[in-house]
Length: 146
Image (tube, rainbow, N blue to C red; front, side, top):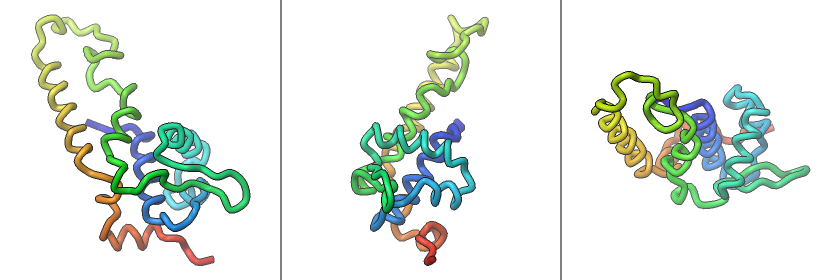
């Protein structure tokens, strides 16, 4: 299974916000830190704000921060809706489904089960699990003194 860039960037954004939970973080800062398009991150931030995972504050001194404690935001909760449009194989909903063996294929059931197990594992981990006690990550993502 491969995550889309949107999910990858959303998780990176959340980890950055968790490490810097004591302040508002700008999209520009996140874009620069990860070398990701600011416009792309703005769309992801809008999605996370709409899902009430991130808060935003416009204007000078504004930015983004987590809307809930990092231990209350689970990786599966972020990945599942962002990956909904990504079709694992063509016989899954949303796929072209032009495969000759679809009516008799048992592989799609195995893949469906594997996909469910993938999300079950992601549901077991919170953003806090990814950043807590991770001094190396904190050093990479902490605010740089001006």
